Length: 425
Image (cartoon, rainbow, N blue to C red; front, side):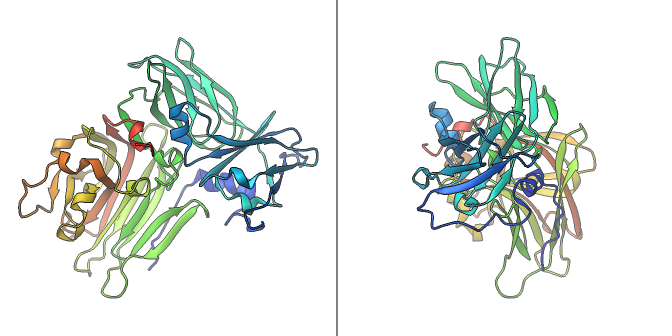
C-alpha cells in the first residue's frame, strides 16, 4: 500500500521551472568528457557573460569552516549561451549557481552529465535582508548554505542580499572571534522577485537548527547544509525517503513478506501560527494489525558512519501541536542491536491542539522500552554515536486511537554547534 502524500515543495516548483518536472535530463556522456550546457534568460536570450559556479555541496560546510572556497569550478556563459564544465573538477554532490544582472539560478544536487546538451533558464532573483540581534560574539558575515552568496553584517546588525537566486537556503552566521565560528541562523524560502526582510534569525552559537520547514517538507534545514540530512517517513506498511535526484518522495515496502500492517501517513506543509511554515504529519494506524506504528525521522547515520556526536546536547526543543502521544527517540549505535533495536533514549510527549514550545532537558530522556538492566547505560555512554532522530507514533502510547497528528516547527538541538556536522571530526 502506497503512503498518501501531500507535499508543499518550493524546491520542486523551482526546479520544474528551470529544467522541467520529473527527473533531470538524462542526455550526456560517460562522465569523462567536457560537459556543454546552455543557459538562457527568462526572455529567451542567451545569458551571455553570466557567471557560472560549480559548488561542492557535500563539502560546503567543511570548506567554509576552514576558510577555503566551496566553489570548485567557475566559468562564463558564451555569446551563444553555452558554458562548459570540466569533469576533472567533479565533486560527489554538486550545486550549480548562475548569476546575471537581473536574473539568477541555483540548482541543488545536480548531475553535470545529465545537463550535457541541455538548456536551463534563469529567473528573476529575490532579495533578502534584515537585522541580527547582538549575540555572544561579534558577527561579520551571513552566508547562504550551498551557494557562493555572502553578505557583510554592519555594526547595527544589518545585512542585505540585493539579488540572489530564488531557492530555499539555510542562513549561516559567521562570528568574528579568534577562531571564527558558524551559527545556524535559520532557513528561508525565496521566490522569484520576492523581497524578504528577516529579523528573527538565531544568533546563539550553541543551538543547532534541525528544521523550521521554511523550505517545505522533505529537505530539512540541515539538509540545505548537508544534502544527505533529509526527512524520511515509515510505518508498518511502507518507507518513504526524500530523493534529491527526482525532487520527490520515494516509496518502498518496509516489511518484506507477511504479515505486515496497513498504517498510512499524510505529510503536508502548513501555515504556522506566526506567519511562517510548519509541517503536519497525520498517522493513520491500522487497528487490525497487532503492532501498528508510523513515524518520521532524520538519518544522522547518512552523514557519518556511526552517527553524530551529540554528547554536548543539553536539551531538545521544538514547537508542536496535534493529537495523541508522540515518542521523540534519539537512536544510537550502541543500543541499536539491543532488544530488537527498539530500546532507545526516548521522551513521550502528549500533544493537544494548542501550539506550544517545548524544551526537553536531555536528562528527561530515558531508555524506552526499559532494558532488563536500566542503569547499564547513561546518555553519555551512547551520545557520541547518535544515528537517527525520530518522532514515533504507536499503539503502545495511543491505545485505541487510529488517527494521530503531529504539527511541528522550529526543531533545535540545544548546546550543539554546527561543528558536530563537520566530516573532518
